[in-house]
Length: 170
Image 1 (spheres, rainbow, N blue to C red):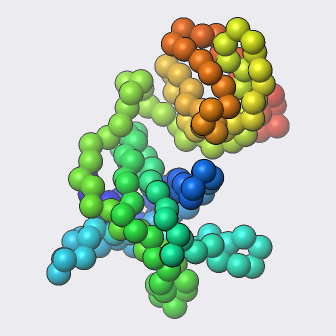
Image 2 (image 1 turned 180 degrees about the vertical axis):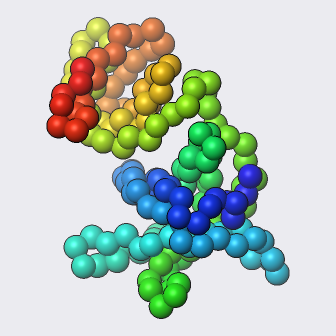
């Protein structure tokens, strides 16, 4: 699937890495187009604001992906470029991707994106770290946390606590 096949109105998650910082934004697709005249496949998404200022990714070395859930399958597109532009008179980003990808499903189960804060404890020392629950399925939970914050190995016991509708789950 190419990025232009994401349905207009679909929810997406934009993951951006700048130097050592990783930021995740929930967004949606405003428009999409196919590759033509040497221009890559792309999608139009709303700008992200911090206060009243629009965050810009131009002139900064950015590594970014867009995650989309289509037909209960996850697709992750590596972005080549994100530029600021206008669409229907409104400010927007245009995200370009050369990828033609297949869905990702490491756990062979339907995943529900969650993207909420969590406290995670891993391994024998049970050091608590702040992280995010990325998605939940019948076969597992995916977490996102800063690199080098914990050390773990396959088989380590994991304990997580997060809220669903104000109710703590452990």
